[in-house]
Length: 200
Image (cartoon, rainbow, N blue to C red):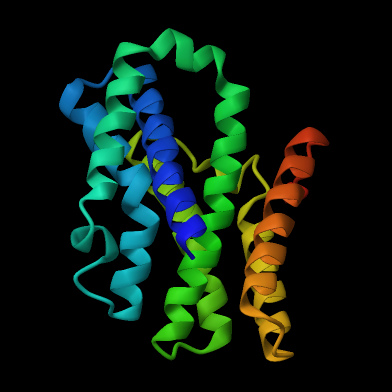
């Protein structure tokens, strides 16, 4: 869990960078850039906590998350050109963040007694809805609805987690297997351009 926590906060910073760069591309002012970075990094987790009635929401109990967002915004603004050249590296961090957010969101829902089916959905919400809100705020059709195949990967990973847990497999094995599954399938999906067919 300690490892997942550190992955979670690093993932928060990477998501903040993603949001900030999107906002910069849209020519928003500094406040706009900061707001979009915040939404991208914490939107999914905040929505999850509100839906499952877990308040105050997670980041309000740990200021480390806000610190990581500030760092992400600073990196995006000051070192924007360097960051843009490192998009592939940040994609890998982003992938790790998505896997961690899915597992942590799912676990949090299960811990408070949410039905496993809904818990799987909450894991997916944690991972992807920050990006959905970011795209809506920036007047774009959300990326996951037109190109990316990672919402379904998060759902599949969550289902795998629940199935393994039902067989009383060691918790750490369940976590690591789910985490690895999501990360690997996400990389393969991007590498080989997997996506759902368009409806015509």
